[in-house]
Image (cartoon, rainbow, N blue to C red; front, side, top):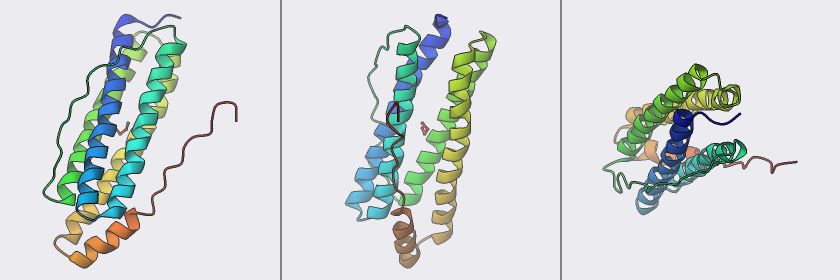
Length: 172
Ligand code: OFO
């Protein structure tokens, strides 16, 4: 079944949003590295790589449905932060923005009875709950840690445990 025009346009735009997520998070990685917060840099790198996978899921979906992806320019939103708390707060606000976009996509997929799109978006709905929860937890801990250098050191170490696990290659 051919993709509905409105849904196609929204999915095509979503590729840009997901790639912009990766861009924002890599920008934060660069800030953390410069601040000597290697654990946070590692955590955010894993986050950025996940965003590339999210973009890939939408990219493949358009191709599988016989459409052609039209890539768009990415925006540089911010390149510096005054504290790790501010960076993670921005990440949370961005995830909330993305959740809104996924919900809008789901509304249209339901409206036009596109069941394959709905299946794809079901995965993203659950993923967004996880994304907001993960970032939200770090925001909460950073707010509690405040100016404690020791607390920040411990949190940085803990966040450095995050490992990016690529999904199995197709056919595996
Ligand atoms: Fe793609 O979930 Fe974050 O942005």
